[in-house]
Length: 279
Length: 244
Image 1 (tube, helix red, strand yellow):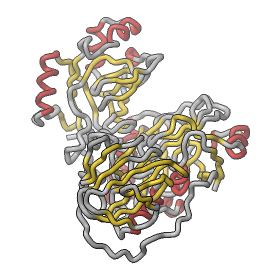
Image 2 (cartoon, rainbow over the protein chains, first blue to last red):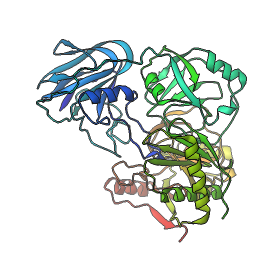
Image 3 (cartoon, each protein chain N blue to C red):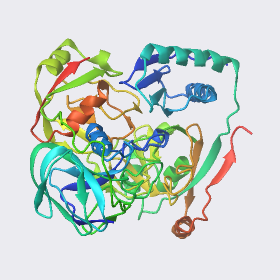
Image 4 (cartoon, chains in turn red, cyan):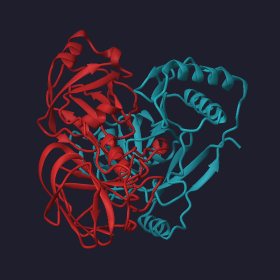
């Protein structure tokens, strides 16, 4: 078991997501920055879909009760194992009783902790990703325990990867959304020339942008939405749906983020700058 | 039966949006469901489809897609659909609702605004069959069509931070049930004790798009009984096959 001594700001178990249940309104959920998860799992020779912990800004304090190997990825958050510094993208040997703690956030917003064999929390609707009400809670709290299998020896083929992170990227690549043609020349000029910033309203469901663009008075029937769908409210607010975002919506879907750009946005926090580029 | 014209739009790297003519209509919905049946018969794994009124979102979970190729596949499927007609089983579900003031905290105000007595409001709400045009917004949340115009009322000016699970609401042309505690702006007129989403079940959501819902007024005592039956897993909502 991995014991959560302190959960930090928002800690949850995530894999690559829960697929095949959109038709009953269940969002995909899963890790916000899948690129970072895949790399962390790769180092441990795990399946890329093995469950990891997603850490948000303020990291947790965690205690391991059996030998294993872990790797950290995503946001650069100062981490220590029994008070000794450990780096992202290396294979780290863990002994029984070891304590991993996190300190200052240096770059990015969401960190990942992968473990040899993946976390073994209960599979519900084909995924271990925490999402209420599929799982009993959306996040872990102090005192929670997450099962994993003991690994006493592991000889990694690669023990470290060169990281080319995407945390400094400001440009999000977008495709035309289903209602793109509604946009006026004025709105298009704003979207593709302005620099936007992430508002306080940002979480696993959606990121709202702080700056408004010209609004609209178009009313449409509710229709499907995806992670990365950018909706435009009548007031001119752009809302970018993320992994826990609802499966349907009633605002025009003007743009759709590339999957790579969803991972870029997942590492942005309140006040960070963004630009859009049509591909 | 003739098929409607459809338009197919790209929707990111692995999805397309297929749209039928604009409108809320049972015959359009039937055409969408016919298309889905024809597509499922092709047995191409990895695709998931979700309906909302006149549109179908199709997502390929395994890889990025080529739009033109996908578009052709969909158009061919529509050709096929016209030739082979499959029989679909659809149900009419009777869902119990307790309209007591304890649950329906807005029912007096709603009745007043609509110029109806509470009894008449309940009579009207329970005397129609509502078509399930989609499931979304929250897991197990049904988009229901067919509300009589006499029950149309704008959503509340200020949404509530927490609407209780099971709450039955009215908002403009819609009526529906909150499947979980949620913030919400609908006018709440009652509560349904039936779990509409249960992730522990093999089929977490028993209602399917295309089914119909009719509400039945129950007392507080019946409500409590259904609640207990639900908790111990012996409650079975009443259903009849529509197209038998």
